Image 1: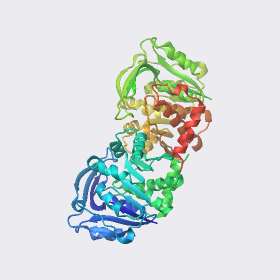
Image 2 (image 1 turned 135 degrees about the vertical axis):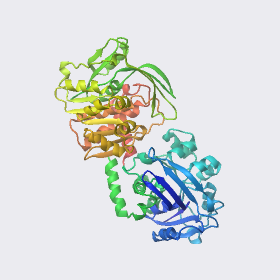
Image 3 (image 1 turned 60 degrees about the vertical axis):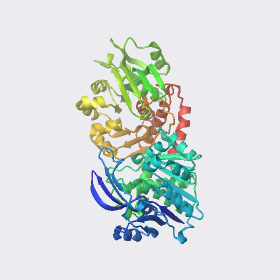
Image 4 (image 1 turned 45 degrees about the horizontal axis):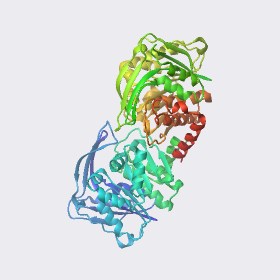
Length: 300
Length: 300
């Protein structure tokens, strides 16, 4: 089974209490792919500018990610600059966003990828997400992530899209903003009413809440005592969830719980290094070892 | 086995988005006792004023709590007035505190209670907690809770006390304030270095982190979609933990995890009603039923 991921491929400048990095490979689709590749073939749909460093592209290729639908647009690459303060490493302060080639991005999916059944629409303009979805021939499992920018400025497009997806992933702030419910259990119920059968609310260091009509569960995060850079942790989590579900090939309580555990495990590596420093080096052996530690930590 | 609980017995005025109550029975020792009584005999050590409503005293007696060491001081009863805002039901805004009889309170323990081996020092001035401890003949398991007021104003007394206790319970803000560590895993390690072998950090709606040299675990809270009044949830949790450990009569990974699960379960009832509305009505059958739901919710 394969997974098709639409999202951003970015150049990130990040500052945290542990240091600063410039021009790192970032973006929702990159982080998602880097995590999902551990379980399945990953096909990336995104756009970069002509200025995008070849080393980043080669790096993605070396990790086995199919770049057939990585477009090179005219314009500058998408850039994000953010900072995390010591007081709350959970919250990114966006210092600058340069959309560049993202403006007017019209995703193209290569013919041989249009039949892929598992699709994740990582964070990007919901109209672009919808455009991609309309190109796919027989989607079976569609995941969606978004962010406050689109919740605030493109809510009708986002709500329209939600009717067509199976799995919706949001962080706590986004879930509250989209539903108007402060209580996360109520927020999850409200998100369910928007369409997606499977709802995952990410609470950063506090773990994850899963909600569906029949199955509900909650897991804490793996305890990390040195968070270096949380950028991409949510995408890394979603990549683990979607990658595992793609590999498993079926949705039930067992596979959903395993998917969330794998996502949590891989995201815990992400925050231990800048950018993809840690996740790029991961093997399933390392993942399984930490997954076991996580299970010891949360098992009654 | 019996449990001796020192702490406050208060009159609470509480306002939350769900309503307002005046002159409710409150205080750290009351909430703790109301929860621990489900597992063990509870002996309460506290002080009230002559103005304290007889109905509250009778109520505690009816619940089987031994009031031999409930002192009636000269002066007004301790009062707390607080409010919870819709935006963050986890955080109590203290509107007024009238110490009354708490000033100069010198706890007295009846002779027949001095041999009790399990002791919980619920939130009250650390010098009073130390005074009680010095009165006990052969403490085996000593639990301690505190609050920011004492962390800020009586830190030397608190640190001194921590050297003598086995189990320290703190919420996330207190753990951070006491250790200067923002990361909760680091904060737990720092608390361990202060003396107590068993550390529990309470994260409100996000559950609990347990830390000891050999055993570490984390559990989410039971999901509540209508939090009416969180006052006393932390004490209710600690009462469940300490009550269960007293009943179990031994400390190991199994009993510690069970204790935290029972504490979490009983605390989830507490927040569903004002004051002790819900916890006073609890039976072990109700607790076991919800504990099972909680386990379904967090079991991999």
